[in-house]
Structures are given as structure tokens and as C-alpha cells.
Length: 214
Image 1 (cartoon, helix red, strand yellow):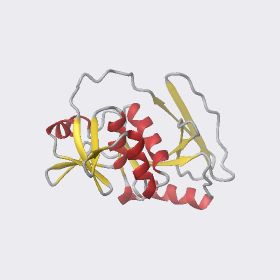
Image 2 (cartoon, rainbow, N blue to C red):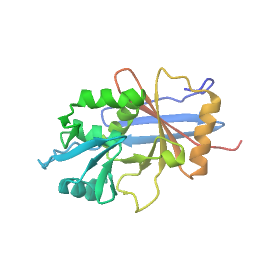
Image 3 (tube, helix red, strand yellow):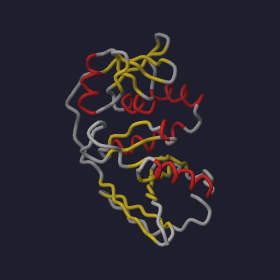
Image 4 (cartoon, rainbow, N blue to C red):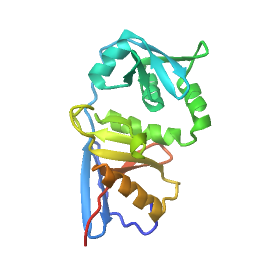
């Protein structure tokens, strides 16, 4: 976290994670409830290919899943997945990915992606955690953030995203300049700033931050 940042108490149990951060004189606390686990009754596996920095599929099942759960984007008649979404679906057994004719395992896909993005696994841990909690998470590069997150029950196109989300590993150093820049991104896009801190075990703790006037 940023040097000098003072955090408030954190309470965790099996169903909820609390997070809060004091900014100025205002404390903001938000609870993310875990989504009840339900078994996916669908055995339909989507076939896809790694193409540059995207995973692409023309499988009918990919279009069905996109309409239902908003995984991927429709581009030129095909479903294009950001790498975090592709790895998530691969881990869940919903997607097979080939590269140059060879099927990729979870570890091999991760190895390939980390060659160009060393922080990819940190981003993936946060993406996976939020998706498992029932939130739709999409990329937010055009906003200057890693992800944008929609509130539960809201799909892209129905309303605006609630948060811009920045994944950070616990060993990273975040200066006040970095922290202020992230706040400006959230403020300029009229969204709340959410920071997901990933520990060595891949567990995530969240802090929500807002501008306040003394």
C-alpha cells in the first residue's frame, strides 16, 4: 500500500470480506458477499485459439455463454476473450485453447502470457476472485485501469460499471503519486476506486477509496 496510508479494521468470515480505507477524514466500508456455489450443469466445452493477446472462438457455445454471462466480446462475428477471461474459463473446464495446433494446459497458457506480462497472475487472481463472487469484470484499458467491475445483477450495456479495479501484489510498492493517479482515473470516469491486494497464497483483500473534502 501507499506509504502513510492508514487502514481501518478488517473483518473476515466464511461468507463476507470487509474492506475499508481512511482517506482524509472519511471512512468508507464495503462488504463483498461470496456467491453461493452452484454446479454448472452444462457440459459444453468451447474450442478456442490463442491469437496474439486474445483468445478467439467461432464456437456456437461461445456465443451462447457470451449472451448469458458476458464472457468475451463479439468482434467480426467471433467471440474474443481477454487473456484473464480465457484462463478463468480454461481453469473451469469450459474452454480448450490451442496454440499452433497444440492444446494448452493451464500452466502452459500462464507461462506463455507471463512472458509478456509478468504481473498477469496477480491480475488473474483478482479477476477470478471477483468472478467467483458473482461480479462481471471487464477490461478497462481505455480508462487507464486494469478492470471495470459491474455490480451484481448488472450486465454491460444495462448500466455503467460501479468500480475501476487495480490488482496489486502485496510485495509491490505503491507511492502516493501512484495512489493519487489511480484516484484521478476513478474520479474522471465517475466510478469508485477498488484496489485488490494479492498475497503469496493468491488470496485477495480489497480496499475501496474515495475522494473527500475536509
